[in-house]
Image (cartoon, rainbow, N blue to C red; front, side):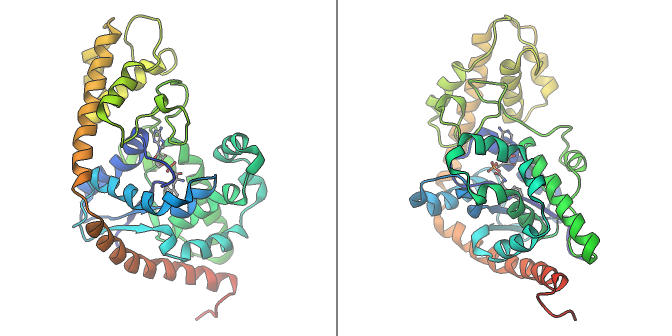
Length: 344
Ligand code: TYM
C-alpha cells in the first residue's frame, strides 16, 4: 500500500513573505517531523503558475530554485526517502491533465473564484486566460499525485474546494479515477489548526500579507535584512485603544503581531497572550515582536546560505524522475476514461 500523500506548493514569482513561511512552509515541515515514515510529502514549485500575471521572466528560473531552497532552510529534511521536491513544469503531465480537466470545469464556477475576481480587477487591462484557468492547473497539481492533505493558507481554500468539485464530477461520470482530497475542515484538524492561517499586512491589517503587494512596508520578506524587518514591525499599523488585546475585530494589527510572536517563537497563543494582554506600552510590545522577527531572519538566512545549487539539483532531478511515474499513471487513467487511450 502506498503512503497517504501530503502536498503543497509556493509560487516563485516574487520573494516569499513571512505569510508564506508561516502559512505554507512551516506546516509542511511540522508534518514531516511528526509523521516521517507514515506519509509521503510532496513539495513543489508551481513555476507554470508564476506568470498568470506579468512578471520579470529573466529571473523566473533562478527564483524557482531559490524558493525551493527556502523550503529546505525552513527545516525540510531532504534525506527523508518519502519527501519529494520538484518543479511543476518539469513534469508535463500537469499541463496535459489541466486540459482534460478544463473540459469538465464550467466558466461560471471559475468566474466566482475570489482570487480571480481580486486579481483581475488589479490587472484589468491584461487579464489572461492563464489567470482564469489558474485553479484548474492547481487541481491537476493535487490530483496527479493522489494527494489527501494539502496544507495551504486560508486564501487557497476556495481552490481546494473547486479541486474536490472537479474531481468528484469526473469520478461520478467515469468511475474511481481520482483520489478526492480531504475537505478543508478535515485538513485543518489534521494540521491541528481550527482556522486557516492568514498573516495580515503590516500597513493594513484587515488584509492578508501579500507578496505581490507593491507596498514594501506591508510585508516581511524572507530575504529582508533583519534590521529593515525590525523597522517594518516598529512602524506596523496598530490602533489607538491603548491596551493590548487579542481581538481580530477591534484590534487586527495588535492581534496579528501577537500571532506572529507566538508562531515564530514556537509558543502557544495562550502563553503569548498571557504575557502581553492588558499591557499598555505598544512600543515595548512591538520591540519584542521586532526582536523575534530579526532573530528568526538571521537564523533562517544563515541556514539558507549553506544550501548549494548542487544539493538542490540532485534532489530535484531524482524527485522529478520518481514523480513523473506517478503523474503519468494518473494521467493515463484520465486519458483512458475520456477515450484518448484504449481501455485495458
Ligand atoms: P502562494 O504562492 O500565493 O502562497 C503559498 C502558500 O502561502 C500561503 N499564504 C499565506 N498564509 C498565511 N498568511 C498569508 N498572508 C499568506 N500568503 C500566502 C498560501 O495560502 C499558500 O499555502 N495557488 C497556490 C500555489 C499552488 C498550490 C498548488 C498550493 C499551486 N498549486 C497545489 C497547493 C497545492 C498559491 O498561489 O500560493
